Image (cartoon, rainbow, N blue to C red; front, side):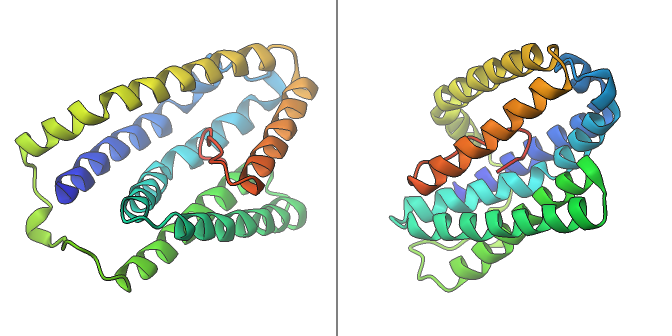
Length: 207
């Protein structure tokens, strides 16, 4: 089941990465990115979209930890990634003046770091199952079961994501200053949720 799930989500993540990279300008138009920030928005979407595979595998590994009754490890890896992301922003944006591209690179790099740490930690755990290369195959029966079980949650997250896109497009239509203000407020809310032990809902790959 785990091997089939890994393969299924890897395929989905690769397809999404390709679509986001190729159609980043269209995504920016849908979000009604202000004209002054349109090129930067396209750059951010492309870089974060290209890191969809990384984010997907981080979430999968976190689910495995939680399934084993360990909710502490995903929290610790997320905390390390958040700190790394902050310093990455300060370095790439503040010192090297890379703008939105630097912020996107810092975000994807932080996610990649969390994946590496999670893999190293899960290899040290005594797992009640084994995943080998033979398990990484397209098993139609198992994949249908995964899709059937996960469809309700996937639909819920899809509807929430669409609502965020609608709100974001409305905010962006009000101008750069308003859009920036909402972005800052979103970061503050995500940080507060993190301190309270709640799971912040990432948008476009942001922590």
